[in-house]
Image (cartoon, rainbow, N blue to C red):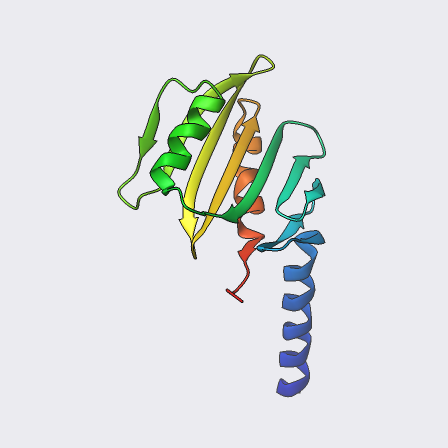
Length: 147
């Protein structure tokens, strides 16, 4: 009886965990498990755009090789490209900035992971549910091992 109950528990946990995500999008550098309540598309082999089904939040994820530039140079040029007023760097070396586009405030974040630049461009409507659901997207993001 204990073995049967334990087996059912494992099955329920597996189904619950897998049901938190919809489709999986695979790119050259990362995999994204799109959470339920979101839809996504692969823009090219290094970029994915995901949007909440109710359109209250969206995230563009782009990953690429750093090349000859430093992360600092890339962050500054990216912030300039989006006309960001201020570029901030946290204690771990990740960069963030805010900017206006199409009348909406967006957040840009850049970090260096395994010699690859990871950029997130986040847009959300000012409501707590949309903000909380961004965690679901980030939980579904996984960098691939270096080849």
